[in-house]
Amino acid sequence: MTIGFGSLASCVTTNRTLPTAPAHAITQQGVKPARIDAHGHTVRGLTPDKAISLMDKAGISHMVLMARGRNDALTTKIYKQDPQRILPFVSTMYPGWHRQDWRVLSRTERKLSTGIFKGVGEVMLRYYGIPSKNEPVINVPADSSFIKKLSDIAVNYNVVMTVHMEPEAEAIRSLENLLDYNKKLKLVWAHCGTVARVGLKTIGHADIGAIMDRHPNLYTDIAGVQPRSVVPSGGLRRPPITDSDGNLFPRFKKLLERHSDRVLFGLDTPWMECWAEKPFKRWTEWADKVVSQVEDTGAAERIMHKNAKRLFNI
Image (cartoon, rainbow, N blue to C red; front, side, top):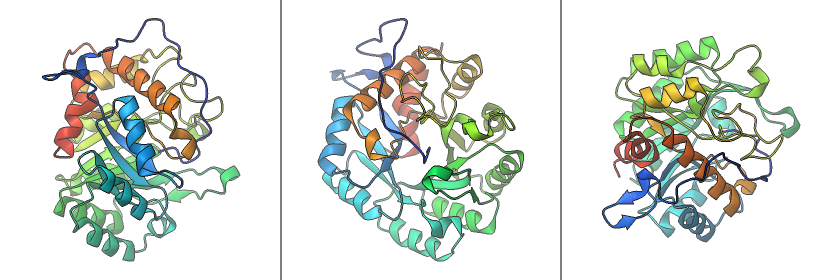
């Protein structure tokens, strides 16, 4: 997730017309959307009717919802509107988690025991924060006893852990230590290993594909890495994985081709402005074009819905 997301505006332009029925949308019942959004956020002001309506209009069959702040009650409310399609996560996006307050782990276990929640997240391991929004800088080592315990809880309840982590060398080492410690953990490192713009000059993107080679329990998503033609000027804090026309940069094309079995489709909707019809459709069209560029004919289906079905036991 990009915590500091701006308002949404201009439409994506492409060099070629997107197919009205991409390969991943063909089902036995005919032409139907087959998209599972593995990276969505519950925000204040969102209603169950609005969430479900926008999913329908964008052709999204299922959606992960991770609350910003302690708002699992709203996530649960939306889930109850359509429990077959909403995939609720226990929220980890509030100060108790950043302080590594062990009491939040007990609360998480109680919530997971209800059987409603499919994961925990978005766990903020390394986050730079946005000074203009008074956001904190977050640094929680992935191999700390606190996060290791969270990973044990996730495995015990067979749920997914989604993390946000800037790819600093020490952060990557700690993440690999966690993946080695808990090889049964299903972990999604969001945003394809990209780094926030504030750290781009000194850090650069991670070769997440090489890390995925070493850790078969590591996944990623394509959430929050759209070009400026899809998100507003100044609103995107992470460099995109495509050019302004939606064409994949070579390093990310290689990632999607080599690991199409562990890459997930996602939008990233951390602000109410993101929950609008135009952004949903534009982002979905962008994602359709992204997966259409992978040479493996089955990759689009895997990235857009099959991987998520397997990961979330749908």
